[in-house]
Every structure is written in structure tokens, then in C-alpha cells.
Length: 380
Image (cartoon, rainbow, N blue to C red; front, top):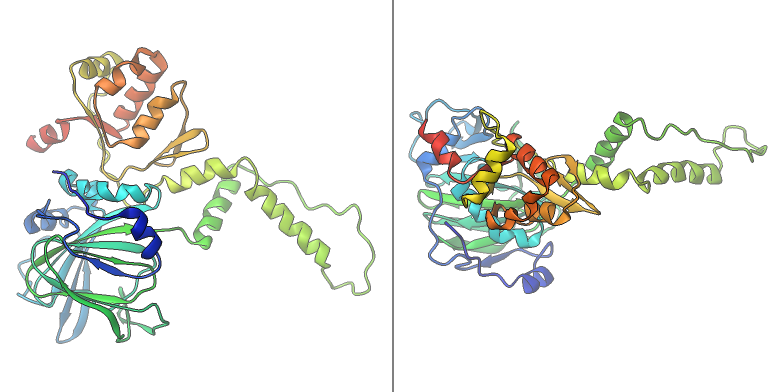
């Protein structure tokens, strides 16, 4: 299943991206849901999958976290089931991410899918990331406010909501419609009938996350061991004072680490790590190199597992937090550029033994698999 997205990206970026929300009618013409509510409920029963059930009762807002055993206790209204990173576990749903890759792989986070009954939702709230919300089956009303400062409160320990806001968008979305909401714009959606929603999130790291992650790397690699030096130390009038030039020198020590050759490889490792668990299933038994060659020569395509980040930075390729290089850079570029590789694209490069060895290692790590293997595993 493939999805055609009707967005003029240059106009969208110039007019809306991180500037203001917008509703795009029939962004996906003749939209067909890639997943059913029953399949979504099945994922929410799996230990590895992050899911939650948000409901509103006479006692107030309630939140339950998966995995769930059943849903028999639920009423016919006022609840939503939300499942994170569905693109990691459901190949057909993962295809919905493809049109958004135009905005860059490193900024893309995950595909969250929700199933809501009438009046189901999570209440008015705001997010600190860009999100495209696609309407699947059913209809849902969306209200979006301006990015003014709004008071936040927690009606439940696991929910952070905002005070009532004046809407600048108040629309009912139907299948194939899309609403884009930049960070910091309050919004609320609630279903008018049983409905499915698909949220493609673009999450950016905060300065705190970057600093913390790089500090961990510096400690692990035992970098930055050089101590502050002041051979030109002079006497000062106030012995308790730290002089401005000393502050500048200390800051320069920190900047030296960030500007060092170690920063770029760390950044690639950091950005290529997924926030959610991946569906990694190394083949049993492991492939031998000649078996990989034979499968490709027979015309079997290779598929990348859902949610795996493959990024290119400087002269290296980063896969799930690991740095890779190759004597055949075009090979690694191919791995990064496409999620499904036609076997003919690999036949020439696997004649190089080191490329075949590297590819076999990636397949045996569970990062790529031959087309059809996921169906065979599901039949067992």
C-alpha cells in the first residue's frame, strides 16, 4: 500500500512550518486505513509496544497503560486508545511515513495511531513537536488555538492539559484530511463517531538533551581530561572574585570539546537512536554470505525494519546509534536512501567481499530482512 500526499512542500515550509497550523483537505485522496481497530487493539496487548487508554468518566480523567489483556470493560463513548511507534510493528501502517520523509529522516519521530469512540480524546493540550494528524475512518472535530502563553494543569498524573482557549481553527476532519500543528499551539480533538487518527510526529532535541547526551559520551570516551591552566595568573584586588577573562577561558574549554572532531560522530550516533523499541528479530539460523548472495541473485528485495534510523553525516553512515563506513560509499548511501532495496541495486557492490560481509552482518543483526520473511514468521 502506498500513499500519495498532496502537499506543495516549498510553499508549506515557507508559509506554515513552525509558523502556524493549517488544515489541508483531502491531503490523501481516497484514503484507505492501513490498519484496523482490531489490529491496533492487538498491538496494544503486546509487551514491547507503548500504548495507553485515556477515558473521561464521572470521576474525571483516567489513564491506563498497556499492555492490555482485554477491552471488555469499555463503554461506547468518551475513550481513546493510543499506540506509539506503530510504524515499528506494522509494515502497512509504516508506509504512511514515506511521504513525510521529504522533511528529513533525522527529524522524524514515530507514527502514533489512535482509535476513539464518540467524544473520545485526550483533552486540550499542547505539544513541543511538529505533528501532522491524518484523519482515517470516521470524523473528528479539531480545535487549534494561537501560540499564546496558556496555563497548564494535570487532571491526572499522566495527563497535562491546558486551560480553555480561543480557536483559530475549528474544523471537522473527514477521511484523507490532515491538520498540521506546530510546537506550542494548544489543540484538542474529539471524535464525532468511531474514528482512527494517524499522527506523524517530528521531534527535535532540546538543548538539555543534547548537553546531557554529549556529556555522557565525553565521560564514556574519557575525553576532556585536560585541566584548566592559567600560566598568566595575576593578583586581583578581591580574592573572592572570578575574573571575566577566566570565565571566558572556562567557557572556551567547553566549546573546545563541542568543536572537536569527536562531536560530529557523537551527534550521528545520538540522532540515529530511536526513542521507541524496534522490532528487531535476528534470523535464526544466521545467514551465511553465500546465502545472501544467492537470495539477491534470485531477485529477492531487502526491506528495512520499521522505525530504524539510517542517517548520513559527514563521511559516515549511522544506523541505530552505530557508526559505519565502507569502501563502497554508494552502498551505505543506498541503505540510507530507501527502505526497500531492489536486489539489482546490490548485485554489483556485493562483488566486493567487504561489502557482502557488511551487508550480511546487518541482516543478521535484524536491521534488514528479505521480502516475505515477515509473512513467514507470522504464519509460524
